[in-house]
Image (cartoon, rainbow, N blue to C red):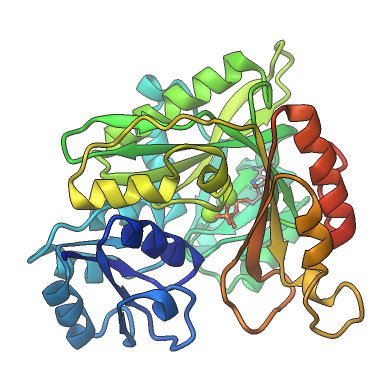
Length: 393
Ligand code: ATP
Ligand code: MG
Ligand code: MG
């Protein structure tokens, strides 16, 4: 059988491997960690650094096509692989998504077709730019200073209220390239998953509404009526426009803010994108006939991209390492028996041995015959697990 390759061995890679294996593919995972969730379930696990030439040669030699699940895989490594094998998404688009400055420039460049803009922002790469922003861009305060690179789950971000706090925050972040973004009055957040094939054809999922706690995704609401339909349509169209504009191949997730702008449903602002399947799309495994990982496998293998159909309303609860310490302060498995006794619960654990606060250990998706029963079970499960973020359910 042919082999599909993936750069990165986290849970996204693991679920990609599962989907590939279901279609009979072999898989190869490149990740330096011997215990990586995807490496442990893959046929081949290349345990080298992401830019190790020998590892890249081995991966290219083994694989028919290669994808990435790790947001910060060196773009140069993808370029190297692309010399001999199809790589999707490509190095250029991954490079854009890895750098908030380029990402925002891209969003601005396609605003005319996507119909959405990003939050007002300024680039801060030098002390002179910092001073200019302090002097001239008080409109961006209060704001969030975000490192241009390497941030995820709210890491590499500092909230600032004054010009003085801004300077201190930039120093705290190491004086690296950053963007200062205006803090917006969010009423909700959502994301859209799009898959685009080599032939430029696109399929997409309806937007899911996301609740973040401490900058980390906590809950995803995926059902009809999770947000005003006018906004949902705009978000979905905008995400598709972004994928086309990038010439993207594979699964792309675009995150949006819903802001209170005085209009009936609020305004839509594009936040950022992830060049891969996304945590907010995990519900598709249990609630849709085709999952985001199936689509990534199809895209990689050059197979048709079926338009997914969601067959059940769903709520996904993220399971962070905190849950393992909730009961006694010691690492201890939650009471899965009680959780799984609830109807429509689907537990996914990523095989990570060591739980840590904020570490993504697994997720629980609740499906059911109707939204009301899904919400009821989600509340019960969250109660059993001591999870936050369900107040606004
Ligand atoms: P991810 O893990 O999704 O990649 P990240 O670290 O790249 O996250 P962002 O998506 O930029 O971070 O921000 C994390 C969260 O912080 C957002 O989902 C939102 O809740 C909040 N946030 C970020 N920017 C703003 C803003 N300009 N105004 C209000 N809230 C914001
Ligand atoms: Mg991000
Ligand atoms: Mg985000």
